[in-house]
Length: 315
Ligand SMILES: [Zn+2]
Image 1: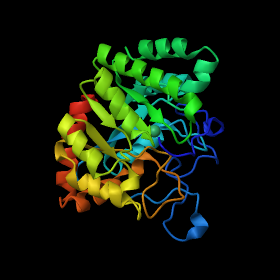
Image 2: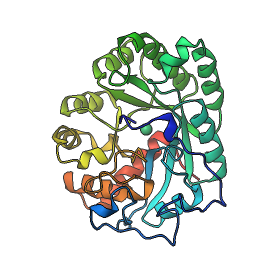
Image 3: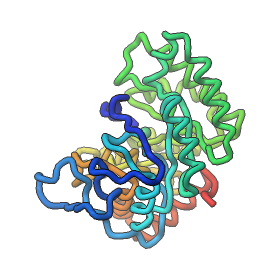
């Protein structure tokens, strides 16, 4: 989750099944109206895309970070209606990781990932709470539907030099947990690729490593190819100025490519400014198919093979 929009104040409470209020927009309310017209709709959910011919999974999303509460079942129904069969719900701190455990128990269309986000590590370390938080993440990772540690990594955009030591320590601890529990690991990396690579070289990567919301260039894609690390592309690959991401996708080994929304952030072009959600994933899948010269069904098959290799099966 590499955008500066994630603020704790945006974190909304979630009600598990009965909630349907005016605060909940399309697609979570079937009777509300969505449109792709006009800037007047800025801030509202975009209309659903055409369904995918082969259902795929959203490899990284946050159901608890929207500006308004999300009714989980309805959100997953809206996704399923356009060929997004399920998602990996990702925790970034203790509250959202606890939410992730509840979510994977509540709906079989979800698998989960738990972690302390690199931007949260310095504050926890300063308060003397980081070790306890890491211990709780480790305990939560024992749940059979938690299939990844993430998002962890390094972020030098939001955290200055005084927070680096805590981020490095936290990242190493997450790598240890993933390896000890044989889980995949989702890396959040912002403005810190050299140090992420240095730490991975020093302590060794877990068996399945994912650069979530891949933000590198063709050179990093070549390194991932060499190492067998996965690259998860988000809506950013559709952004007009994202030439580096499209070059990376072009050289990425197809067996290492994944897709995600990182919802509610990073809404694909041309819907930037609208909230993102798992039902928007087909826009990115279609863009990736076009960029790699595949038909959409073949792209879906590639993504599903890779998704299963990283997270196992949902059923
Ligand atoms: Zn994220």
